[in-house]
Amino acid sequence: MIRILANDGLHADGKSLLEEANYVVQVEKVPQEKLPKVLPEYDVIIVRSATKVRRELIDQCPNLKIIARAGVGLDNIDVEYAREKGITVMNTPAASSQAVAELAFGHIFALARFLHHSNRVMPEQGRNQFKNLKKQYATGIQLRNKTLGIIGVGRIGQESARLGLALGMQVMPVDLVVDEVDIGISVFQSNNVQLGVTLETQFMDDVLAKSDFITLHVPYSGGRPILAAEEIAKMKKGAFVINTSRGGAIDEDALLEGLNSGQLGGAGLDVFEDEPHPRQELLDHPKVSVSPHIGASTVEAQANIGLELADKIIAFFGDDK
Image (cartoon, rainbow, N blue to C red):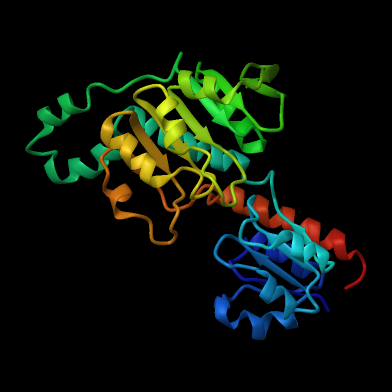
C-alpha cells in the first residue's frame, strides 16, 4: 500500500485521483519538528513552500521514494542529495504559470493607478478627502507602449510576455540560458486565431535601462540577489519592479533605498526575504503593493497542480500499489 503525506495540503481533485488508485493520502499537517518520527512511515511526501525536506530528514526516511513539490521552486528541498539517495524529486512547472503571471500583472495594474494605496487610504479618508484624493491619484499611467522587462523566460515569464503583448507593451526578455522564445498570442475572433511571436532575449543592462516595469520569474535559491543596488542604479528612473518568484531575488535594503530616493517608482511584492515575517517597512511603504505569497493560490491552479502531481505519482508507481 502506497502511503502519501501531503503535508502542505493538496487539492481535493488530486487527492481523489490518488485515492482512486488505492493510495492512502494523509493531508493533516505534521509540524516540521515531528516529521522525523512520522515521515518514515510514508513512501511519498508532497510539500509546498512551508515544509522543508533537508538532508537530515531524508536520512531518517529510508522508505521515501518521491518528494513532490506542489509548485515550481525546489529551494525548500535538498534536491541533489535526495537524488543521490535514489529518491525521485518532482514538481509542477506548468500548472500555475498563468496564475503567477496574472498576479504579477495585478501588482502592475495596482501600481500604475495607485490602487494599492487608495484601497488603504479611502476607507479612512474617502468621505472627507474625496477631492484631494482624486487629485493625489490623478497621475497614474497606462500600460500601452510602456516597456516590460522580463527576467527569466520560462513558463511564467512566457505567460507574462503574452499578457504584456496583449496590452500593447514592448516586451524585453532576458535569460541566462534561453536565446529566444516562441510564444503564441490568442486573438479572440470567430476562428480563435493564434499568432506566433518570437522574442529574442536581450542584454541585462539594456533591459534595466529601458524598462518601465521589470518582473522577475527566476528559480532563485540563494546567493547574490538578481536585483541588488548595482542593478537598481542602472534602472530607468521611476521604474517599477515586481517579484512573484522568490524572496531574496531582490535585495530588500537596496529596494527600500531605491524607493525612498525616487530611483524606483514602486514595487509589487508577493515574496519576501523573511517569510512568514516580512519587513514592516515594506508592508507599510506607500510605493509598495503587497500580497502574502499567493502566486499559485487560485482555485484553478491548485486543481491543476493536484491533478498533475497525482498523474506523475501514479505513473511512477505504475501497477506497484
